[in-house]
Image 1 (tube, chains in turn blue, brown):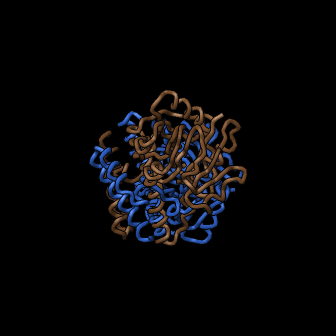
Image 2: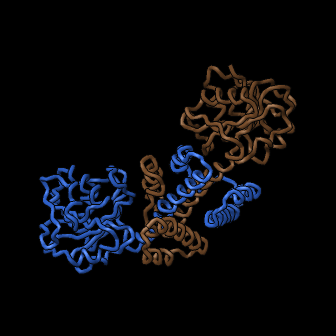
Image 3: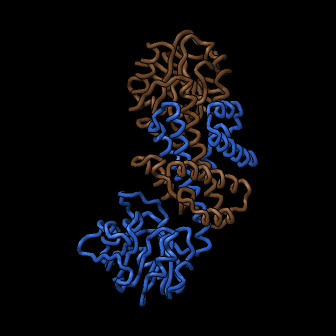
Length: 254
Length: 254
C-alpha cells in the first residue's frame, strides 16, 4: 500500500488523480489546491484542503503544479516525513531541497484539460536521492505505466529540450499550417490525415528517413513559389530557415 | 467501368495500383515505368511496359511521378483520347497542357516505401477543365476515398504550402528532437507517445488552443537554459525563431 497526497488541480494533477484512484494499492489521502473551487473534481470520499498547514501524512507528496510555483509551494509545505516529488520535465530535483527526501515523478506526455488519458504507454521518468526512494517511485510508477525510467535531473533537462521540439514546435507547425489554410479559405481538417500519418510513420522509419518535400529534394522552383505565396514576414523566415536546415541535413549525406 | 493506365513506379504509383486493383469497377489496363525492374510489383495478369510509344487506350492516364518529371513525361506520352492527370500537390494542371483533356488527382497524404495505406480517409483533391471530366475523376476518387474535393491549381498550391508545414517541417522537428536525444545518449523512442498525442490532440483542440511550453508561458528562464544546452548553431537559431514566433502569436492575444 502506498499513501499519496496530490498537490495541484491542473491537467497533470487531475490525470494523476484519476489514474491513482483506480489503483487498489494506492490510497489518495488528500488533494491540496490553493483555490477551493478548483478541487471540485475530487470525489467526496477523498479529503481536500486549501490550507497548506493542514497537509496529511503520506508516503509520497506529488507536486503536480506549474514549474514556477514549485519552489514557493515546496517552501510552504510542512512535511514531517515522506518523499516529496514534482512532475516537471524542465525543473531540477533541487528545487525541492528544503525537504529531506526529494524526487521527481515526471510523466512524459502532454495533457489536455478535460481529456483523461491512460498512463499505460506514458514514460514515467523518476529520480530520487536514495535507492530506497527510487524503488518507492518505481513501484508507484509501475502501477500506472509499462515504461518507468530512471533519468537524472541533468539528463532530464536535455530530454525536455527534445520534447519541446517534438511537441511545442511540432504543434506550432500545425498552427502555421492552419494559418495558411485560414488565409486562403481552405479547411484545416483536410490536413488531418496527413498529420496523423506523419507521426505514425515514426513506428517504421527514423524521422531522417521519413523526410520528404521540396527542401529535401532541393527543388528551388517550388521553394520560390511557396515563398511568393507566404505574405507574412515571420512565416517566410520560418519557411526559409527550416528549408535551409533540411537542405543542409540531407545535402551533407548526398 | 473505368479503365486506367498508371504511369510511374514510386510510392504513390504503387499505392494507387494496390488500391485500384481491388476495385471491381476499375480495370488497370497497363502500368508504365521507365525502368523495367521497378515494375516488378505489378501482378503478371496486368500489362506493363517501359516503352512510352506503346501506351494502351484508357479512360484515365494517371501520372504518379515526381514533380520534375511531369512535363517531359507528359510530352513523351502519345494519347489518342482519354483524360491525363498528375498526382502532384505542388504542380499546376497546365504542366499537362500539350494534351486535350487534362486534370489533377492528388491524394493529400505522405506515402512510405513498402507501406500500403488505405485511401479511405485520404482527401482526394481533383481538378479538371470540364464538368464531364470533373465527374469522371470524382467517380474514380469516390471508389477509393470518402473525401473527394474539387480544388483549383491556384488554391491547391496554397494547400501544398500548408502541407509542407504540417508534414515536412513537422517531420523535421522530430529530426531535431532525435538529434538532441542522440547527442545526449537518450532513446528517441521515449518521445513517441508524446508525438502521437501531439497530433491526436487536434481531434479535440485547434493547434492554437493546444499550444503549451516555455515559449507560450513566456518562461525566459527555461528558454535560456534550453539555449545553453543546444550547442549546434542551427538548432539554436531554430529554437529562438520558433520560440519568438510562439511568444508573438500567443502574446498578441493576452
